Each structure stands twice: as C-alpha cells, then as structure tokens.
Length: 185
Image 1 (tube, one colour):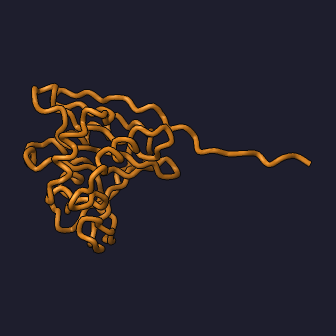
Image 2 (tube, one colour; image 1 turned 45 degrees about the vertical axis):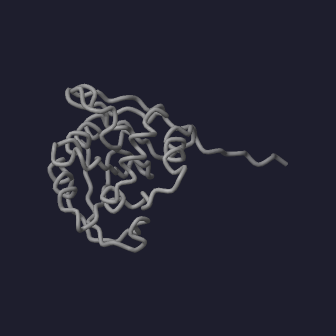
C-alpha cells in the first residue's frame, strides 16, 4: 500500500519591478507603511474598493504588506511609485490576483491627491504590457458609481462583459459592478 502523496500550495512566482518613464511598479515594502496607511485611511479610497475597510483598523496596513510579501500569496501587489519623475514613492497600488486557466483579476487604486493625472491608466497599461502572470485573459470589475475607473479599463483595451455585484467592506453592502475582460495577445 502506498502512502498518499502530500501536496502543498506552490510557491509564488518572483515578483519583479516594472519600470516605465514616469512610474515604476515595485513590490510593496515595509517603508510604504506610512503613506499606504494615510492613503487607505481616506474614505474616498475605501469606498472605491471591495476590501479596504473604513475606518482603517489598527494593524491593517501591516497585515496588507505582510500578505503582499508572503511566499504563498495568490495575489501580486505592486506599489505605484512616482520616483522616476521625482514624485512620492507611493501613489497607489495595483494588483493581479491569480485565477485558473491562465487568467488573473486586476485591481488598483490611486491616492486622491493624484487623481486625474493618468497614473492609474499608465499603471494598468504597464502591467498589461509586462504581463507578469503570462495570462491570456485579465478580468476587472469596477463599481458602477465609478465611471472614471471604467474609462481607464476601456482605454486599456478591456471590453465590458456584464453587470454584477460585489460586497464592499467599507460600504458594508453589496454594490452594483461592471465586469470587464482583456484578452492579451
């Protein structure tokens, strides 16, 4: 009789920095804690996300950074770093959550002080161009009361596929969403 084979979750792939002319996307680091906490504590940021609570509880930022650095993570999270243009080291975050069948889901937010400057658009395009998960398809969802984020996606080549709903921790309710996909060639 043979013993059952033990399986464990595969180690996360290495997460590299992605450098552009105006921004870089780099793995989150402990030194991001202060700015990340300040930005994520902003009600406007929390209300635009599924998972950022409002008010931000003590220790949430440290837990988020720790999860982003975990070797067994299923989501890669990058700091949107503005230092290539002498801007702050943290302007927001962007992530890819691994799904099955060569697919991922993208998520992002930018601190309100940097809204309407093209930062999210550029970060999304950089991540799609680099395609670090080697996806064939990337999904995204945005709350229907956030048309600017929807425009960012469509300008990056995402196509609308359906209406849905998602729970928002900050809003403590289910919120109507638009779902998009991008087939990477």
